[in-house]
Image (cartoon, rainbow, N blue to C red):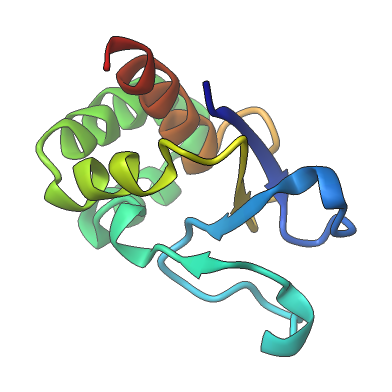
Length: 121
């Protein structure tokens, strides 16, 4: 079974990260592309622009609603289904994100979605 972990892009790369995937729609500030060390930039797995902008207007009160809406987007996403198939043979997948908030970010919701969907397979 694939282990799905999350990590800020600003943390050091480690061998234990396995297959590293940037899951933000926007490229992280302050990191040169040659220093990111990711295997894939999966912009299509990020929340829609409308959802991301809505959430950033009121992060303190909108987390649960954001999580619910983003999970719905993922369930209806062909890109998410294709990504599941792509990572199903990987031992470890690290979802990279830039957010300063390590407890409420899109990578955690994507991790939740993937853990559930890969278990069902």
